[in-house]
Image 1 (cartoon, rainbow, N blue to C red):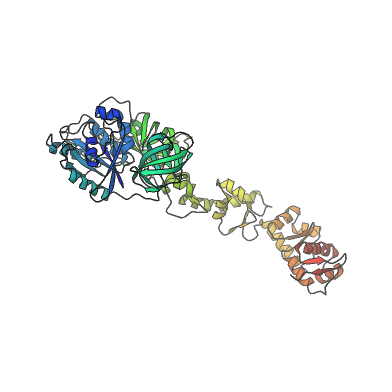
Image 2: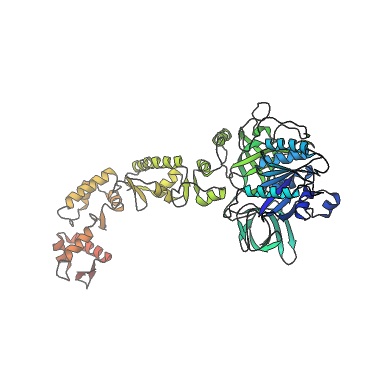
Length: 615
């Protein structure tokens, strides 16, 4: 199915038109029908000639209900803009267009109603010019009469053409359903309605409503029970949840959105310098602005965030939230929302000044979200630097990584983007320049640590993590490249990772043991070689020496070599026989045999004899 919102000045026939198209009453309140004035959102639907089902969100046109209009038009991908032939372009026509422009709505139809009461051509001509200036250039224009039925069949065919041209919604997209109605049904509990712009909702799904779990017990689409529905669609959900549901809140896929009350945005002035009192004879010149463009506004002077009031109302979906505006520089601003909203980078908030006097356009700007998790601004000049950083930034993964440097895949998805490149480690993604810089810093960090800790075999990974400011040790491991390597939780240089003096001493010891590998040196010889207790401990940690017992050190692998020598003896054998076969002293032979016992290479038979284990 498809969803189209109405727009236009009050009493220009929007509700009459959708009533004629659908045969359904969009005004559901008794007061609305009594006064002939839409106050709340109306939802009706019809089947088009092609068989496609189309739902209308009928919005109020009165200036007092602009927030309600935005709640209905915001989630809809297309608009049916209504102008009365006998009324022409009016103040709320202008305000609705300004709002649609700021929201980025670029698909629609222009319908001139009451064609039976006045010539529709002048109103159509002026409206086409205004729509073109507001980002809806080239929309199909039709003249109809909801009272007589004139042009309704052609309008239905035009609606068919409109929905066929709409970009398809992604059924796999994360769900964000802005609630526009919430009520309780006896025997069922909480029921909410809204426009599902993308994604899929299925009975049994677990969603979140303001961080509160909400289970979908059942759902309807156009009053028909269904088990699953894909966007774009009008849906009603029966929820099981603790607490109330309210209009302006959103049901979202868990973990897929960033719920935040602080965002950095790029502002775009809404509308053009056209008075709200514009009539059907107004002429327009120049080209329209688009959300996100950094163009000038009026008089050749650059428009910026500083031109906005410090306190405004932000609209997104059905949400209406007070916010404060902090200009950072140019068109970059930081918004502080009165309550958190589920956002993605790239979302567009509409900023409105409800305090403006009657007759003034109150929609002031569109605010495209560049970062829903902005960094703190603590230093002098940090705001200006942040504005420069975001001035040419796109709301994408690359820009987010330039700011945050390291983000998990889940965090990026919650910010609204999946990176084009793979992770640097596990599920971590990094800004390429930052990651490359870390790789260049690591060898210097390891060198400095070795200079300050000459007897340690290498730099502990945890110390390197702290020095580089990384959140996990495995990120450090991912940065290690030759000649650096990892050994027993340390980053070492070369094969041994020993300080140069200790490495040279071990080499000299190796020369001593080359001919008699089991003749462990005495303490005085170790001292002459430069291997005191601390140096020996460092060499043992690095795997450069084998400590058989306290004061008894051999070269690595000497125990395995000893087992092979002893295996050639008649089994079992005594300590004396082992000592002679190994060519060493009893001082070394006894602890070496005990070491071999512990390793399972030999075993004691009794208090005198041992034998080699065949395995």
